[in-house]
Image (tube, rainbow, N blue to C red; front, side, top):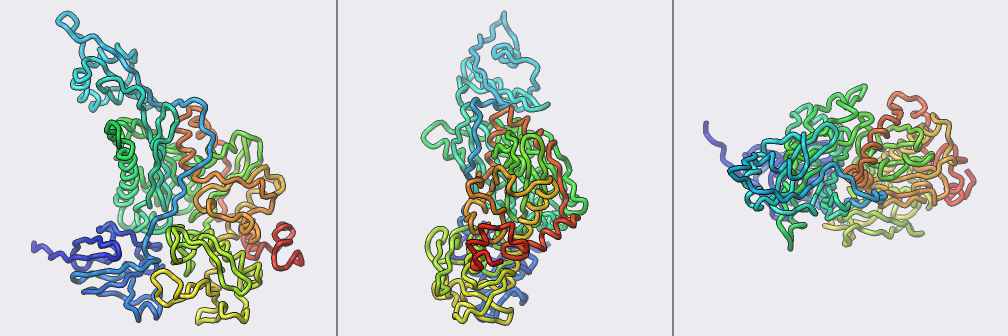
Length: 632
Ligand code: FES
């Protein structure tokens, strides 16, 4: 067969390139070049987030996602543009996945004494002689005093050299997690004071890995990155659909590659200036992710999670060996996979609960984790109820024309001045590109308090040049085009349609919280604490979120932020036997409410499509501070 000639595609501004066959999409060429382009709809040509300006030989289809300004300036969608010859491609600022502001910290209370499931023991052995010709393995097992452990072939292969290289002074490592145990390593010399593990948070958008000294609990380093699956779709639904259409191998590989790249970075950093660490030094892994990310990592099909009645493949995942999931760790070391409660309440939420400590006190506490889905857990040590709602991608920058992820160039804090101009903070400094979730909350709250929008979030004609009508309805100018990064001339605006999407997201979150409270016969005032987990909460202004009616109007001191509870919980499970037991008991304790068939949820959702709510008595302080000054 005649081989197809390759063409070269160079991406600007970073200069990376790839050689691809003619007919490849520009989006695919970008993936191969290692250039991250935002692709919220996974290449369906719908979201309009993958805008690029190519020069050279290409073909493309027009799309409603392109504006007249885009067409005039040669902008096309990377997912529908086909490479036809050598090409230079400028990725527009809003389409670049820049440096993400990933929340890697969490505030869990570490265990007083680390009790990992791996242990090391040092022994000085007598060398074999003609009168003592005990085999190497038995000699080591006798020396360290461990019997009855499975011995993987890899350990056996390393053994003869290890014992002799150490002149019969060796350190053995055993792993014993649930029913998976084994002698996973024998090293020359005394290495008993170095025993490492990784705690992993596999998020839909980002992945965070901690390298942990499991003897002391010290976090030796943190690495994070976009989940490389992002280029195949924004949310879990898009990923599952991709798996159904194209198979799941690529998704499994991309998640694993991201985790491994993080582990590799951590090992290299930790090796600098000391002895060289390898994947063999990583003896244990504790992994928390939502149900879909967990199943994709494990290579387990996800279509039953997507389709009614939305069931996960397992609540309790079996312990797996590093080798089985291809992780950069000792191939016989065990990886603990956090259990899932439901298709949309996964191990990341269980890890949030562990990190928050809410399962150890009476409460009731309300834990809220907002991403593309919102998950809530209500309760305490005696009972727990949980649910999830489809928050939509608005707070991750999807379905909002000015929206973007929390990365460099995003407005994350914003104030509307009396003359309706804005004052804002841009992540990473410099000029703004768009507005991320916390900035959108500020925007909505500020527009409401200045009377620019009404209770239904409809833009009013203010008489200022900042509000104007367009073909698509009213819009508010957040910033003029000349003050934006890469100034294309277009203003940064928020439209009526954008505001409705943000309003729906806040209504889904509050509606879900209200249903949990109602079904368990509680009121917001009864809550001992409200725990906000996850990256979105990290940048959030609680007062403004309450002003909008997104979170319950209770004294602000009851609010608590735990940051990335998912990696925090994973760390606890890595270090503490008690936390591992609690992890399983939390899942058993949770009663799951399926909101998609719950009429009460729809009532609450509809009532929440107002600022702050149709029942303003639920938001006394928000009303007192809002533009209506308590007038209702
Ligand atoms: S329009 Fe190209 S990825 Fe959505």
